[in-house]
Length: 371
Image 1: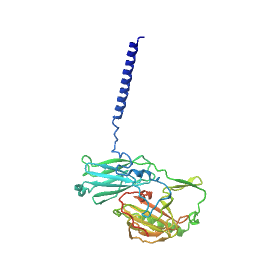
Image 2: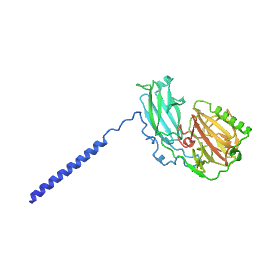
Image 3: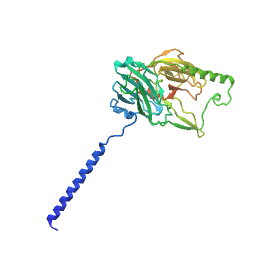
Image 4: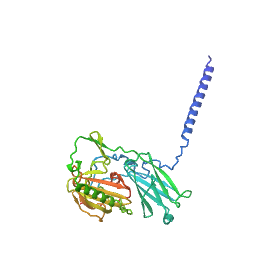
């Protein structure tokens, strides 16, 4: 074969190779330009931090991290958490929380145009079909959204209804992603408890007292008030060391017990307990299971609960500020040792208290320095 024929064949090969390579690149670019499928509802893209959130906050501890919570002279470092923003034609909102997950409390801040504030008489906010109370303050509508620890769907539906806010419809729905939380479990072979809490036979006097306690709690939780707080929540103790996390289940003799309805902080008898935020004391008394028990109403059906105290230092009706001394750590009621059980009840749902004390939700106004 002549050298001329070889050169011709080699040239044809090069032309074919570059042609195929160019065609492959065009196919790839076309695939990248294909539009994404639209959702039935406007979907909040994800619960990841927006550009307004600091990047270095990705190194936050796990939701149910126990052990010691680092604390300095100015108190434990507060996390920025996660937030999403949404801008509509006549209003905007920011939804924030430690995590968009089971057992967490979210805070919704809606900003309508100033000229519309006086026209929002029929505003309605619902989460999964349940109407939520809200307060109007400084030009914003403020709402708390509790995500039940038993929430079982990948997304929840937030719906806003007010004909003055939407140009085409009276309402709009938003899909909010909800992550699954891996709540802790522990196996125990022995649990020391006072005999009065383990016996199957109770005296009539004890039964009467338990009934009285239940009625007192039911009455207290009927308290409904406007939002009473204007800054973030604080820890209830000076050196927060988590003894037992929220919704932890004890497995006793291969059977799961009831999930833990709060967060337990270590402490010695007589150690001070502080209000985690401003509010009104709606219950302060001795209870059968909770021991010396205090409940503070923070508004919008958000209540903080303080159990097993050795001494109560407030009474029903007292107004308290964040950081006020309200009691002392003890081991009263159904307790195996001195500690503070801190609970957070929102719209009848028990929520992880750490989801608010660890996170920037409302603002950065600090708690008073505790002496």
